[in-house]
Structure formats: structure tokens, C-alpha cells
Image (tube, rainbow, N blue to C red; front, side, top):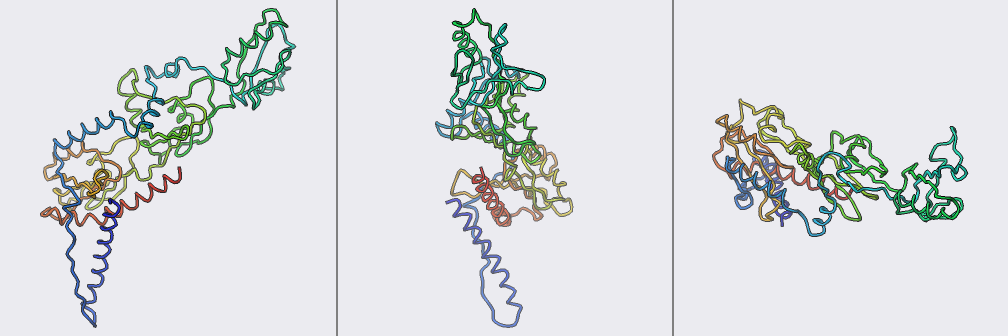
Length: 399
């Protein structure tokens, strides 16, 4: 229904443009074409609200409730709970206090039996620990003298050490064994998208969290979308806001935010900023599109980044924020108006946080009729919505 309304609006805009062009025929030799320039009313599909202190407080409460409530279906909530780990400090050890690495196929182990050098593979300055180690084969087995093939896949180093000691007991008197991983090659995660060095990262004996993986990839690039990082696991995906994650961690000195512990096969995708932008148009010094990165953008901040209001032509009472209504299929958008004829009203603008795809428009005409002003905005806004929706679809297909 929403797409149909947008298409209808686009069609109406195109029809008006065609009729306007045909109007030139009145002044040309030949026939005369009658036309009607009456535009369809927009009151039914657009809501208009003034930006007031009460509105800002209400939106702040709504945003806080939205962050506290669990989004998505039951499967998504269960996945999110499984991924979430409470942090008592910033150390990795407290993220996973009982974490132990489990050996897998492809790993190379270094096994040393003290006082029995014949059981250790020959080493030397020309051979690395990986070259001299014991390879865990694809079936999870490795070969060791006296006891032959031993299954080690899925076991911790302590378990392997005890198992080898028991199996060597008939041949050696109380063998003292040390087992280490010379090369971690069985488990990995992939970090892709807008990071400085995308690629594969091994999982080792130190637990790898989401923030650790991004840091190891060189951090986010300048065009990264901080709000929609995608973690894919076991055929499911969850969207994580790094901005919210870091904000929660910095909320208290103890670090009470939530990080995620990654496991083998996880894919971390950082999209580019894409449609996560706001657009500033109209009577400003420099119309711009502003990416929403690590920090929120307020209405006053957006106008400042556009060079400010054009003092000679702008109507200070007509600063609008056009926000698409995604909840109600019968509504196209909500238009918020800031009356800045009193400069102190810009303080309200500093507390009005913009959302992705918001359109900030500063009008030049006096605000006498809402319908007339909104009708002027709709063609540009509808074009932006259509463009960003196409981009969203392309991004979804590309993931």
C-alpha cells in the first residue's frame, strides 16, 4: 500500500510536470490545450507537528523504550540473547571466564614428553614450530609414537595432555607431557565490508569478541555504517549497532555494556553508510547529505554543517524535517516544523535527533498554508525515498 501511494505521488508529480510543459503551447502558434493544475490534497497522507519541548521529551522516552524492548521475532530474540555476554570489566578474560580453546582439524600441536627427546619430532634453527609439530588431520586424528592414531578434535589442551599420559603409561613411567598449539588453523571468522583490512581472523586460545575482531581488522573505515553491522551465524543474522554498544560500555566506568563472543564460522559484515544519511535542502548556504556515523546528528547540527540558514531569503519560521512514516501504510510522512524566528528555538533543534533518510528543508516563502508548503516538498522527498529504497534492496541482495 505504501509503495502504491508513493508511486501515485510520483505519477502525480510527473503529470504536473508534463502539464506545465504543455502550458507553453498557449503562447505558441496553433491550438490551445485546456489543463488543470489543481494538486491532490496531502492532508490525508502527511501529518504535521511543531517541534516543541514536549515533543522532544516524548520522542526521547519512545527511543529509550525502543532500545529496551526486544525487536524481531522469537528466533531473533533467542539469537540475540545467546550472543550477548555481560561485561564486568573491559578484559577479555571476564567476557568468557571459563573459555578454553578446543582443537580442530588443521591445527598443529607441539607435544613434548620431558626426559624423552625421542618422542619429540626433531627441531632446529631451520625448522619452525609449525614445521616440527603434529598435524591434526581432517578426521580429527593425529599420530603419536607408541600409541598410534589418537583422536584429539574437539578436546582442550588439558584433555589431550591427560589422554596422552594415560595412553603412554604402559610404555613410560609417569610421563610428563606438555601440549601447546603451534598454529591455530581450524577455526576462523571472516570480517568483511567497511573495515581497513578485511579478511579471515583465526580463533585462538584468547577469546575473540566482536569489538576485538573489528580492532584486529584495523577498525572501521570512514564510510562505515556504525548502526547496522551484520553478524551471520548458523544461517541466521542479527543487526548490531556499534554506536549503541560503545555508548553502553562507556555509560559507566565499570563497563556494563554488552559485547559478543565470536565462534567458528561467524561472518561479520560492516556495510557502508549507504542510505544512512540525512539531507539538508532549501534556503541554506550549501545543500548537503550528511552520513550518520558514530555520533547522532541533531537538526541544529545538520543546518550548521550546511553552512547555516540563508539570512537574506530564508523564512526562519519554516524549518522542516520530513520523516517517512514506515509504521502506517496509509501515511507517507510526518513533517516536523521548527519556528526559529526566536533564535533560542535552535536549542530545541539541538535536542531534536535526526533519523536516517530525514529531509531537512528550509523554505523561502512565509508559512501561510501547510498544504501548500508540504506539496512543494513532496516531489523532492518522494524521489529521495525511491532512491534510498532501491539502494536498500541492492544492499540486501549484496549481503
